[in-house]
Structure formats: C-alpha cells, structure tokens
Length: 265
Image (cartoon, rainbow, N blue to C red; front, side):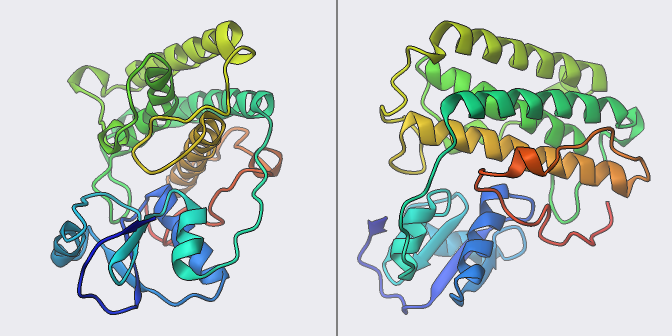
C-alpha cells in the first residue's frame, strides 16, 4: 500500500476495466465485505485515468482512499486500505499449482480448437479485446512467468500484449499455446524442486513471493479459460470438457466469469 499527499475525500474508489480478472476479483472482495466504493471504469470514463495520474499510475485494478492507494492484485493491501481484517491466506502447494496450470493450458487448447476461425476477430462485450487476443493472453500469462524466471521482470505491459499479424489464425495460436505448455513443463522438471519459492518475485504490483506469483499465474489463466468457455457457449457451441470446480477450489478466483455475464458475445 502506498501513500501520497493528495487532497482527496476518504471515499474508496476502484479503478478497473471490463474483462480484467483482478479487477472483478477486487470489486467482489469489497462487496463481499460490505465496503461501499465508487466504481471508475477506465474504458468508459475519460477522467478516470486523469485521477490515477495523481498517483503516477496508468494501470488497473487500483483502489484509492484519500491520498493512499493499493494495487488490487494484492488483496491483503486492499484489505488494509479498506479496513478489512485479512487473517492468513492459504496457498496451494507448488506441485498442485503446477498440475492445475497444466490442466488449465490443455483445456485452453481444447476449447480454442472449437472456436470458429471466422470468430477470432470478434470482440468481447464492452472490451476492446478480440477472441484471438483472449486466447493469446491465456498462454502469455505463463509465458510471462517463464520470462521472469529467465531474468525479465513482470511489468504491466507484459500482460497487455496482443498477438502479432502472424498469430491471428487458430492454428498459430494453438502452436503458441503448445509451445508455452511444453516449455513450462520442461522448466518445472529442471527447476521446480530446486527453486526457492519463498524468494521475492520481481513483479510490478507489489511485494510478492515467487510462490504467490505462481498462484496468481495459475488462477489468472484459469479465469480467462472460463471466459473462453463462456464465449463458446455464447456462440451456441457446447464447450468440450470445460474446467470444473475441482480446478477452481483453493484458487483465489473471482466468483463471476464476466462483469456482466448476461452480455451478448
């Protein structure tokens, strides 16, 4: 949590964007604890980013209160800002996270194989993100983890990448996903048992251990695979073996798939 000398009222404000998994989780967290907040969707309100500029920020989710702010990706910081008792948060063991991540990525490949080629450039509701972008993002999340382990810090822009012109086809996206999944499997085989998972991770959103970063990598990609299944259902296609409750349990995921689950895809 950060402090800045700013003449602001004490109202809690949440800066977010549609389809952002951490944004949805942040709003649900505050709502579940009965904390009222002002909702500031940066995609719909031109002044929202201007308000964040006071804090030197241009990213979401951010929760502010007076001259203080917390990054919504670290719920314990949001809890401290909002006056919510945090307690101890349990994290699944590394090997369990690894197992679930592999299932998540294999499910993403299977669901992407069902997505019609001519639907790839359609956009998600109220979000300038195509279905191709969504598929790419699912695989880019663990790819960013591998980059981190190769010495590249995780930045906000790491998660804002989009597929290039040569990766706009379904097969190209599938090849990318298969490659990421294989490289992740190889990395765990070589380093998983030897890595110090309590070491600090070099991530943009706050103080995190590598174990916490792996957890975020897992639930983040999991949430977007849920969205991919939701997209298929909206297209009238029955998702083939989508992720089930056994994969969600123990992961700090949002309850909902989308901000407005009734939105037409």
